Amino acid sequence: MKRYEKFADQIAELIRTGVLAPGEKVPSVRHASRTYGVSPSTVFQAYYLLEDRGLIQARARSGYFVRELARHSLAEPETSQQPTQTTEVDVSELVFSVLASLKDPGTVPFGSAFPSPDLFPLPRLARSMAHAVRDLSPHAVIADMTEGNPNLRRQIALRYMVSGVMLPLEELVITSGAMEALNLCLQTVTQPGDLVAIEAPAFYATLQVLERLKLKAVEIPVHPREGIDLDVLAERLSSLPIKACWFMSSLQNPLGASMSDDKKRGLYELLHRHQVPLIEDDVYAELYFGSQPPKPVKSFDRDGLVMHCGSFSKCLAPGYRVGWVAGGRYAEQISRLKLMTTISPSVPAQAALADYLQHGGYDRHLRKLRHALEAQQASMLASAARHFPASSKVTRPSGGYFLWFEFPEQVDALRLFQLALAQGISLAPGPIFSATRRFGNCARLNYGHPWNAQSEDAMIVLGRIINSF
View 1 (spheres, rainbow, N blue to C red):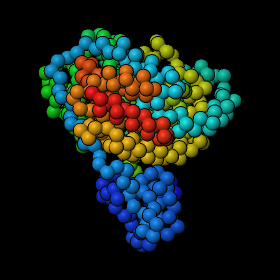
View 2: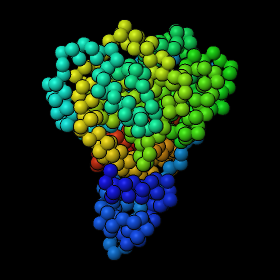
View 3: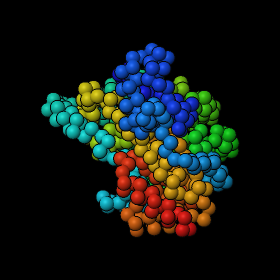
């Protein structure tokens, strides 16, 4: 990172944490230069960058101020209520009906599971694909199929090392996206009828996997900022024969919650005590807004109990369908199970990603992507405060591209979904995120697409529909 980018990130962190409040003046160029030991030109470049990111604005003859995106902000939701039973999962038909709504390119994609493809460096990836395929040896096409491309595995291991996780290459298995990794992990440690602890609310694909494998869900409440309730999990582990946990410890979908390092360590110690494996779904790991990447629970793992799953689909190349799992003590079983099912993800796609990670400027792309998502989040939050009922509640995640809304009790999210779709607006209604179809007055909205007049108009329409209940 250049010096002005680092300084801009420091100021952004002060804004994000509330040290610099909306409407407050940021340090003058002269004061910032003297205080932080940087040149005035560095300060100017940093402030121009923060303007582009939508965090500050210049006022004539007055200096720079933190943007007041809305006069009033919506409150945050509370921790989800604790369900009292284990649950047979049956949500696929509901999920498929929602996903079908996203096929129309004219629909405003608030219900999408992906950010805009316009935010990805697809032309540069195409050059990496051409280069990698040209240099791919015939032997490698066969030899790399099981564990995955060795150059790609090395690049992934290097990124683990930067985040403080020393990972042996033999623990890494390349998969067809994160969903295959998560499926393989679950099949490795469970049998039909077993109990699996999941979050409430949980990503709907989690519920579909449990349904397909005939597993029962034990829902653990999630706080919108702090993550899963460890006290409830401890009680469930003591009273029920839970065979595995499937959690997102950072930027959880749909809430965006991120557990603190202390809480992640506590989660690991709790699972270690009970010898219950953790499947850590960490597909949004690269989309944090702060200056430091969040640590995975995997970083506290000392005996291979954590299966850490990642992917390039949410941050770089969704169509390439390349993910991975750091399988811990289960790596060999996962690799064998993959060989018995899909054998290998695309070998050329793996080679292209390895080339891009090594030569394509991945970190530069990620910084640009994070800045875009952060500005788009601010735009959606401000728009919601203007147009949604004042009693609505919304999360404020420190990364990713989802907001979770809790509307007044009389709002029926499934009916809202239907009415919005009739107006050309998609959203993800709350019941698809629960094995027991709870969260009937909630919805997840995606801010991962560039904010424009169509986005603002869609929020106005949604506000009118919500107010009509």
